[in-house]
View 1 (cartoon, rainbow, N blue to C red):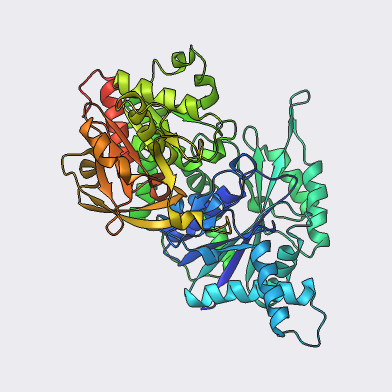
View 2 (cartoon, rainbow, N blue to C red; view 1 turned 90 degrees about the horizontal axis):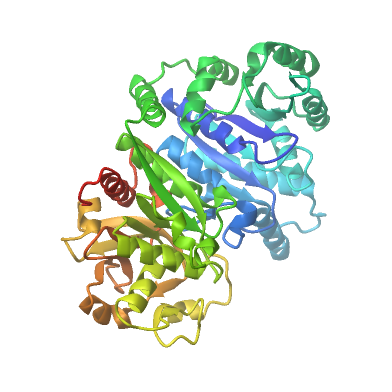
Length: 539
């Protein structure tokens, strides 16, 4: 059977949740036993997401194969419960780079190289190659941006061309503003956006309506009249409390059966095991027995998407432990003043996530000092591990002014520094320590060993700075615990406190966390936070 295609587009504005629609479609088809993979089109001319600012673009997600991709890939992996690979991310930068290389090599001799057909053919060749190589039943393609953007216009045109030769179903996400003055969901913006799609040769089969409150029947009827989409193919996508309720919400509206029929797939029954797991997850998220309060102290908290995988990893562990994790987002600069600790006093656990640059660093170090001194469970992720090391060097080992060369190149105590191999890098993109690396636990009496239940673990990385092994023995004499390293060059992977629950990891374990397999370090951290909440001794 030839691969079928579902193309997800957005209208009116970005940030409405195309990634969630795409992930839900993937989840539904996977539960029916079809072989599916996502592809994400992004129109920006960056080669990948590696050099993008989290404030503008959200979290940079890292795959096992070292690819730095859009944060939507995190959602795809969490819904599909399996790792993906970098070829599924197709950016304008990758495409134009390929086209220019081919032109310089003479592969287009005698031709004027143009958007159509050369660029669109490149897109079609890539997606068909992925489909054939992976023997897919369905490929679900998310077109980044908004219909009408110049940046994604060649992707939309490629999908129109794909429709001429393959079975393609278009699903469009729209937004219906609610005017409280009249209590009416307004359809005019969607009507205008729909006409723009039609002008590009795209006719959606399904329309998903992002709304405040449930989609009204009269609104659906009006949309159907002006878009020629059957009412049964227009779906409510109103705001729900958890991401993982969305596939079930769509299935309750009959979307799963309509999608399978429209694609012309062989009829199958939904996997009761997978469906029950999803229902159980939602029940755990919606009706937990316990509550626990965790503070995330970061420098990008104004844009929560910068830490989306950390949030999701906490939810996965909370669901597994029958607890709601209430997150308090704390801007690290707010902790640099004398009274900053007041934001931390009623927390059951503290996390310092990853990041780059000097801003807010001292506030994070103050949060770490508070967690260590008050014996509040602490989890440091990448930068959070590096600052945990610096805080201990300063305040326990007496290394006054200890720092990272990222923040103070002239510091006397270079606890965190760049390896010589990193200093020689000419380019910034794709030159950090990226992808999955092996860690070897060297202290069995450690949080790391308790979490991984093994002497070996594999986690994803994204960083340029490392713990300076020159200070390893000196800090260990003061009770600092180096619990795991890499097998070959002994780069430090995890560090711990001896007298309370505190662990920092150079990796980003949040990137591999899924609902069925929560990240081990997050599980131990949430367990410890629950214990503190209940006044029990923290493990």
